Image (cartoon, rainbow, N blue to C red; front, side, top):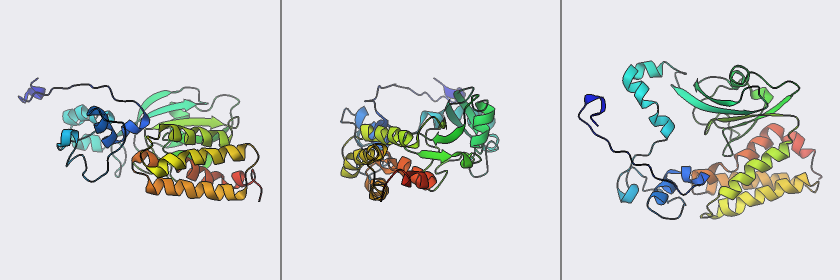
Length: 267
């Protein structure tokens, strides 16, 4: 009531969604609010043109809305001074894995992954040999330790498909196999597919099957080629953001660890 003594009132209603990662896609969220199946809508029209109940709708992430009080209190210029010129503000990072201190931290844009691991996480646990980082969640991919000096920013962190995404950073050591990481990420996307569009519905489980084939020792060099082909097709032809990023774990692993994967297959 009477927000900032402006005379403006705002009613907030909290709704329980249908659950599932795909509900993070804006039109899927609208469908669940209206009682429909949790699957994306064709765009256009975009939500700003026809959203909730076919009315123009603005959709924002709670993390975005959480920045508004600070901006309103201190001014936009103060907020823009945080981070970098290209990416102002902060990002909530969820750090886990073989670090001494896991948890959630709000960090300025531009903070490097190395600083996140060493300063926020207190460095790797004793006896752990850093092998790779899972960055951004299952819609993103994996980085080798050579990419630790990458600064966080909006959008893609690397052209292979690694992006900041939801802000997850998982620190992995040499006790975790590359194929295990690839399978966990790829199977999550396959399980979360709503099934509406063919590329995501059929392509994501096929990528999991190929990873399993290589892990079982039956992989051929053609399987790696097919896996990359599937990842690119799923990314380019899927309907919503989940499918359009479902190939990223495969593509990033092939980019950074391609030689290692090739050694696990036969001609």
